[in-house]
Amino acid sequence: MGVPAPGASPQVMPETPVIYVLNGPNLNLLGVREPDIYGHETLADVQALCEKAAGDATIVFRQTNHEGELIDWVQEARTEASAVVLNPAGYGHTSVALLDALKALSIPVIECHLSNPAARERFRHKTYVSLVATGVVAGFGPQSYELAVKAALKLVAERAAAPARSSKD
Ligand code: CA2
Image (cartoon, rainbow, N blue to C red; front, side):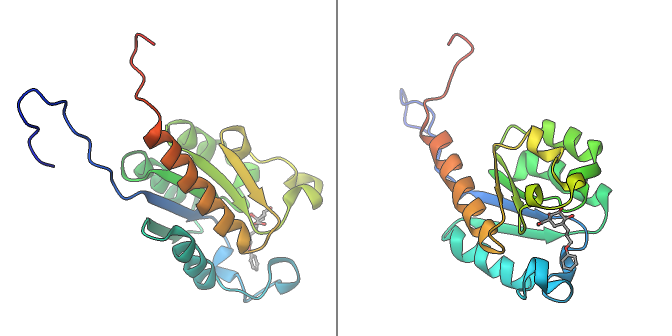
């Protein structure tokens, strides 16, 4: 960033948004098992869809089967990401620790599901993530991710355009 001219306000350069797309346990099996519920597309296909939807923005796309690793990535997103798209998979229904990590974020969080958990077994009807998500996209298969990335980018752009609020507001 350049040095502002004398008397000018410090300039904040527009940055390319960085969207973390984080995926929880068993999603590595996408396209390999249970195609009747989750379809035939693989997680690599979903990643390609996210990258296409992001245009010039950067997608950091990851999957883990480990709760602690997912929490580490959410914590990393505090300083490295403009927004998070999260498919918590089974941890959405069980993990208070994941919820606690998400509560420490001040960037938009879009919860994303391939299926519509509300139309499935009762234990899937609630997720802890929904308590803190800015919004939820569910039930559109891989297209849920595309919609979630676009929603995240819109939220990031709106935040960048909003006048900065001071403590006096
Ligand atoms: O619909 C979704 O995206 C879910 O987050 C998927 C989770 C499930 O526990 C949630 O209720 C809804 C399950 C992810 C497991 O993914 C698999 C994919 C293919 C084969 C087996 C599991």
